[in-house]
Image (cartoon, rainbow, N blue to C red; front, side):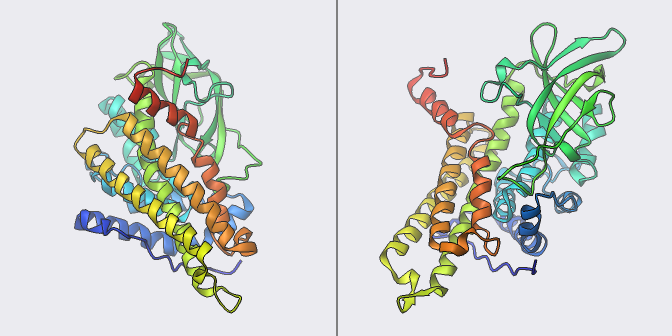
Length: 395
């Protein structure tokens, strides 16, 4: 496949850039340049072949995209949450699977080890994860328990010799086939949910790859299977018990997705805009027709609203004031906006929209996963509904 030139121009209709610090813009620029140089030229080929570009792992580590808000003493970037959001926006502008790799590593593996782990665990795992020497994954979803993780069956039993025996299975796990480390959530003998760090090579631990995906094809997805895995007790995360542990991780991951999905939307919009000026039909560019202008006008409006929502969420996150429900709303909004924009952009490109010559169809398929994982569209609606009414519609 011919190497493609990335001519992306970022939409900023309401001068949101004026709300960003110089450091935040510098962070965004460095990741945008990386995507243009290393991701855009290769990603269509990897997606078509359903291959994970393994070389991006040390690249993302070197760029500081793994755990950018983790303190520098553990290998993180010590950055603020708006910088983190902008990183995820730019990575997903390239591909949702690339952003997923970084989101999982930072929010679902490094964050729980930092937040819920002890100093020994932080020093052992975080620097290797931050650099990309190790890749991590997060085991919560099970074959029969997705939106209702409280019903999980994966369990640990005290083996009496300094180990616990871990049994069960997790599925739809990003990074699993290539991960050296898994943060896994399981029930103990007191029926409490606990997190523990499982390392590749532990006997009885396997990570079969999930095949046949039409979405996130350049991302590695797999299962985690535990058959009497002996895990040292010092690998249990000591500082949290209950569902609040994994849910705290999901809030951080959803935050990144809210920014990331808008990156995909921005790419689809920019592609459609450029195409509308070049594609001639009935004697003039299709961008000159009312229906196409309606699509573009609605796209940029929704992107602008989401940019402002994300920025405000970032300010609240930096101040320690954001609620999980606010993050939930932003995640759902971004995914819905991006999915609609991808579909409309695909239509604007006509037949060319289904080819790998343009990024739109790949984004469109990827976003079907993004709107599903980390809480489906409907689950997030219920989270907001319960927050505003005080009434629980989940049961």
